[in-house]
Image 1 (cartoon, helix red, strand yellow):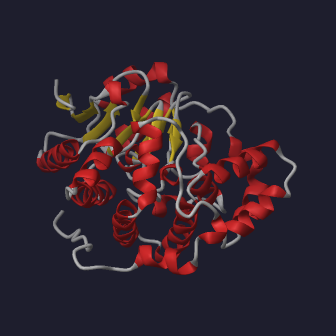
Image 2 (cartoon, rainbow, N blue to C red):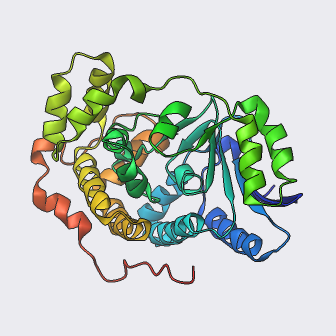
Length: 349
């Protein structure tokens, strides 16, 4: 079967990510096919809205197919650059989509899964949602417009999420402005049937509101104060120092998580998040992320991180440098330099 199912259901144009055994991880072909399908649906006057979901019970999408990125880099292929370029162009297209774009963010939604959902106009989470930007755990940095989304979250919730990679439940995703509405997973099939009969954005909003329910409490509501205090610092060392002084168990979990992550990625990600806050517009953030992504895959840490997580699965990456203190400002700055060939043209995407 196809890795991407393109279909019509009433007035809905439907796109279903269909690699359930791989948690619907995005391949390059899926990105190209999905973007083309979105253009077709945008041009079809009989399509009132687009709905994106994932096959299987585990989640919408666990991210990009990082094993293919790893294999391509080892072979010297240009796939990583092509993949990210076309993926980021699609992310921008989703953000500016001309019709309601409904994302069912059920189950695991990470990395590239955030890119195909959180830029939409109607983002629905369930009691099973676990949304995250986990890139710093593999020697990478938040991408797919993640720096923009994280930087626009209230207070320092985005900085916390980007540096700790802590999954957000439904309440947290709504609080961080990654999602809009909570609907129980058991209600999703009926909701989709109703949406397939809708003719206008107003009807779509009404249909979702009718199924809306209150999510279970998340991490953010109870920990907002110390998250803001600790993650307001502009260096990773200061953030971790502040966390070390907190007595809350969740603060200690955040400290432990950051201690496991790639030191250079933490510093690159923090600079990217602060830069995204200054830029405050999606496309420039995506352009910055493209430069950073190309620098990440060219450096040893990302290949090593993917090896440890998905290739050998020993969960013991050997970071270089191995400590925060050995990551210099010059090392971090080198990830943000614009080089020939690393510019994305978003116009007419």
